[in-house]
Image (tube, rainbow, N blue to C red; front, side, top):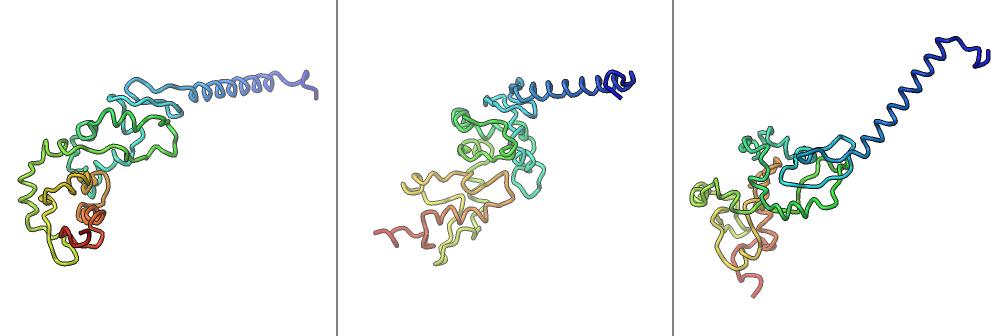
Length: 204
């Protein structure tokens, strides 16, 4: 049977299938060229991204947002801040720079922001420094190889500690299940690499 002699129902079916394919291809092309929506969101297949203070952080930082629901993460104690990322991550110029060249690449959608720090005052605006010192006065988390114990919230003030850039977020990884008891000793060992906290015992 030649195409010219095909039944009318078959011609109609082929025409419908052809229209559906054309519409599908057009939709894919449009989605691929999509721009981020107002507020920093985007269509699922959008590639370009421009960060602003109104951006939807959860569009890419899925793990960080999920941590607010995870009791093992310190973020769960700050659940009221789930949609207010800039309360703590308030270094807007730093955030702008950290997001330069970022795209909506599916391989990076669970990325963790590592290039900016949470400033000390973002934590101390709610957490009283003296209360923290008192709460950990008996803590043995920071104990060196010689038995010297240091209160993690009352580290001796000196030029070396100030220059080390130690802040609350150095030890408190709010969006992971790793607690400060695990991270704090590692922070100290970045400099006290011989396991001795007393100054002048290694470098004289």
